Length: 344
Image (cartoon, rainbow, N blue to C red; front, side, top):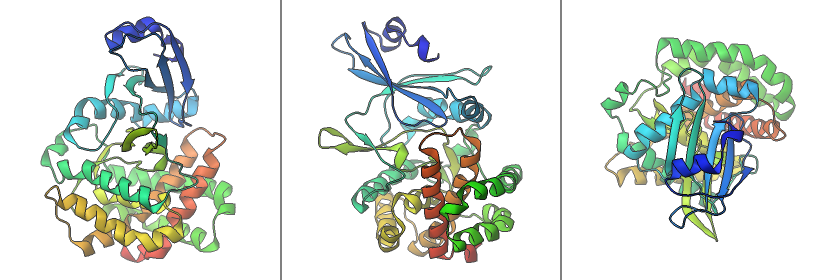
């Protein structure tokens, strides 16, 4: 299904009721996928007023990336096979299909409006961060150290020798081109840290320890929808293209490392980690505070890797450079502030 295939007749089949006229508008930047809000203008009263439809990116580079990295496959399978086994708030899925032969997909999802998308470039308040970290615990706790996750073969993993080597190769390939574009946004200390981290990336990845859980893989402000005065759940997580079976603290470090501005993060991160731990404990998952802090500091490099690699493999947009610049500067500063290199 492409944008031209979204018709009232097809949506009537999907939604199980007469849709009538429709109106589509693009929402978000969607670097790897295309997101459309489709208003059901003359729908039967039992149907929603609108839905969100996710499709492959219309940018060929981004589309090829989404297929090669199995982003499209994983997002559909997350909604169909995993979403009901965790407690984090996600949109209801009306339809999920993935074509193995072409790699294309379609998702028809609940429209969370009037909730509003966070902004990765601007950052967020500590109050919003509190809501987000508590919601993150609802993703991790239900499948915390669940051995059955080893049987879900499509979940992303960064634990095998092959995966570790692949990430190290991507870093080696893209770090130079990344600096050509983004060095002007970085301090000398941040550039130096990125260069010192490169030779240590294998040790960083292979040295991870502790329990594993379902992870989002890209838990950041652009992928979170927050309640507004007009309504909506407190926070809803979207863009499930990188679900994984990995260290849960990686999601936490990734969100706080770039979601808050560095000064805010530095004064608030310990209390936010405590809030996350309390939310886990409420669901019978107890974590040692010193272990949590060490893993959080160590995982600050996850956002650095994402900024370097992702900035080089997705199509450019009007906003992409400012977004990746914000991510790179904040994640590198996070690693500097926490002394993360010394923990490898």
